[in-house]
Image (cartoon, rainbow, N blue to C red; front, side):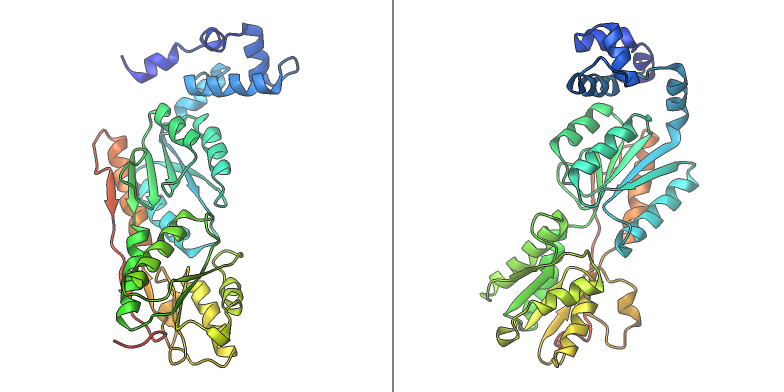
Length: 339
């Protein structure tokens, strides 16, 4: 029996029976009219969505037309990283005849969950999420939806369906070991506050491990707001006590590292003579500087392309690898000591 055939038999009677309420209550709840408590309304609407019930024939027809629609959730577009991922992904999907609808979560897991609920009501062909850390309700909801789900940018041994990205902990460790090999022993990290971005937390943990392994001082964490902007990097560097300054400062992104570099030079410090600076991602910014920032290049566009290809394979009945980890490339620059 096909899945379509089973969902075609879902009607208001089935929803009412499952919810333990009358047909009139379901009708009022779905139409948003008075006479139903908010709590009951939310329960009925959620149950109807999970069962695949659409309140009228027009909505059901619209759902069928969305068989080529892919929902995409990104944390933000005010970031070159996710713009690059999206570029590779959308071009690949467009060439295969799929359209996409996108929204940003602003790193808010509850907002991501609400977006997924809205998008699933349109019966998309697939869902694409950023990262592998989600609210438990979202994981359960997508498992019940039984559509392909792609998690991008991060990886886990237990994805919802398939994931394509980098190992952020290993990336932090790779950069940290390079710095430790250069003799740095008193490092600081400038980035998002703990808990705000799970990928940043993993990279910090990898860096911290690298310095711990060589008996260096514990990695200091300097949290800043303002995203990955130049100003946030300069703000973070400004919080450093220069009377007890670190010998190297690792920034969450290249943009922040550039801001920190400018702040260090304004403070009269020589980079890398007095202090080292590193970024992350290998953005185009680092390729046009006369003194390139030491950084780790992430395969952003490749993640988008590879992820979209694996998703298309799933949509065509194939079984791609559930976990695909792509490598990062170390780019030694002029802002750290030479080997």
